[in-house]
Length: 316
Image (cartoon, rainbow, N blue to C red; front, side):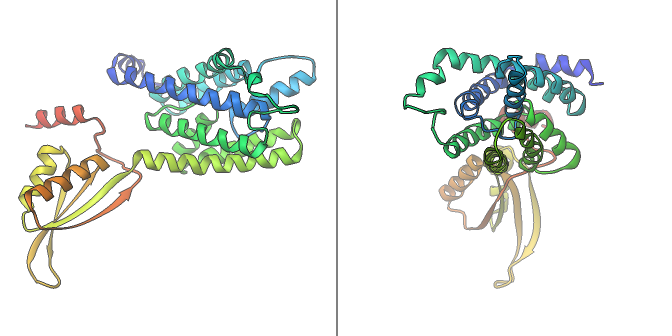
């Protein structure tokens, strides 16, 4: 069982409450994607919202009317137990918040701008009035929200919980995990939708996984920078003292000149890399630099500048 002391520490930390705004904004956007594009079109993309539409439709046919937003809350409540015990207290607590506000935020969008007010053309059944355009709009908006939430170790709830479990224990990419979990849910749509709409939903689920990976890679992108220069100490000093980043030094020998030099390798954010390049240009340092994009970083990596500075002071 997760340590209650860790839970208390998480809630008392400033970072959690800073993330609260990001989670609220992300879920507000996700709720709009579900309310305006998914529910009216009845396309069952692999998500808990899609599963909720199926279950609501099945129950309605049986004479029991339960709103989609209410069904979302019920299913998410069950999955939150899995998130808390299988993934961890931080992910679980954050997902409790995001999952439980999805339904109410959908209701809020209905008060702000009812979807019925957007259906202005005769016979129009969805906002875009085309299942493919509804699908693309939903996937793009939801994927951006998912990527932001995954970055702060949260999620939109539901399907993301299942995807995170697959990601953690089977070590699949998060996009692949989203697609696998979503494909299973998509198949439940045969209960209320024709074959054509089920296929559209499966394609949408696949695209969702690709787009999530794309957004996640863009948000996590780092620069792996290799530098060869005769003024190693100056460049090394700037990386460590100004950028507060580590670096690794390798002895090397020029194949053309035969000179003995030192190669510096470091991992920087895009902003830090630009700062380093400005420093090298201003100081007139002759260098040979290669830089590659890296989308995933494991091990010791400080993302918070204040925390890095504090850590550096403690070491001194």
